[in-house]
Amino acid sequence: MYEVRDVFLEERKLKDIAITCIELAKNQVDSIEVKIKKTQGMNVTVRKGIAEYIEFSNDSILFLTVYKKNCKGSASSTNFRTDVIKKTLQAAITIAENTSIDCYAGLPHIKNLAIDDKIIDLNLLHPKYINLNHAFELALLAENAAFKFDSRIVNSEGVSFSSALSTIVCCNSIGLLQGYSTSLYSLSCGSIAQSHNIMQRDYSYSIARKIDDLNPAQSIGEESAKRSIARLYPKKINSIKSPVIFSSEVSPSFFYHFANAINGYNVNNKSTFLLNELNNYIFPKFLSISDNPHIKKGLGSKPFDNEGVYTRTQLIVNQGKLISWLLDSYTAIKLGLNTTGHSGGIHNLLIQDHLSNNVNFINLLKYMNTGLLVTELMGDGVNITTGDYSRGIFGFWIENGVVQYSVSEVTISGNLKQMFQDIIKISNDININSSIKCGSLLLSNMQISGL
Image (tube, rainbow, N blue to C red; front, side):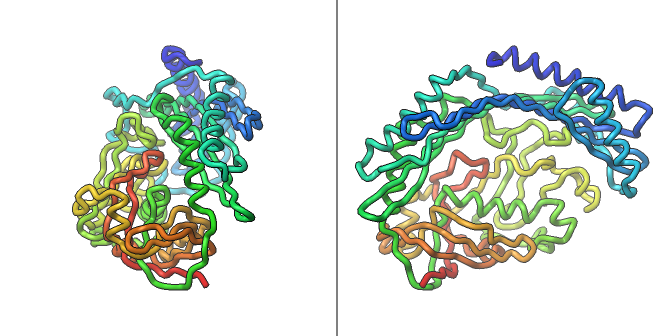
């Protein structure tokens, strides 16, 4: 199925299945929500010119959530036969009948649902037939470019090409029936550099909704080789407090922690270090953050969230001040607020620096003058409840705005609340491979633990 008309026919079939679920649930439950997702795709991995891994996928899953006397039950199935749907529905009902009453449980308010108007076309679907030979050729182009870039590239970690077409349908018993389809393509290359007895690895990748929007395979391979070579002969450094730059490859993770901290579930459970910070200045006043789910071909774009609630552009941080949580219907009701359309998480988080005046990465290094450039994060030492932050890193030591040498066996640590305040500048080298749109990030001070 690679023609647009075929994708739309599949969407129609899934909607018919959703309607069947609603009909089967009549007179058995107070309300029901149906979510269906079908994805078909291909993944090819090449290593040293040989196809190492080939996978074709055709996955479908049906989620049923029922509400009965303020009790909730959920069940899922990968089989869409009517008899199986009946068993799945009964399983959800049984769970609801044996679950404690929750007066906040239920469908979203009808006024928030994507029911009446036609949903926005976000240009997310660009199907193209890619056969095995074409996928293999793309991967081989990237790998060969890495090997040709420099004789110190001695091995490959593998080059992977993947493509996927997905259709999402959301339906409920109060009139919602919507769906949309997406395409996604990616190409990644990992390479290994060696000089004498020293070996280092790194990678480069590209992700896009349309295959023609991927970076050229040759440039992906060359960038992977360049990064691997730059990591050769890393040094250890002394423990010190110093300015730190998170490169645009890792800076999105910084704001992912922020998004997690303001998620309605963490707020409601009082398990976030930002619990009492709504309407307070948590970032410098030059920084604003918005979430835009309607960017054409955006990696995080969607016309409605996982509950079928219309998505909309939402200002989250206004000139340093936190002005909104990220809420689905359930957490919104519990907090006495309205849903923000974030069932399923953030969409396209846009980080805006009002003062840096389009500073590029080279100028950001010069502005820092001396400090640590972080290009890879390791471990999961982030506590959202307290804000404590500790991660292993790989990166480079900078002096006079110029890279001096790579560094390893280093840990950076701090507290996210203070780290947010310590942001000085953000460069314009936005990472287009992430749904969190942020350039490289300069913090004034962090604890660096080395020797």
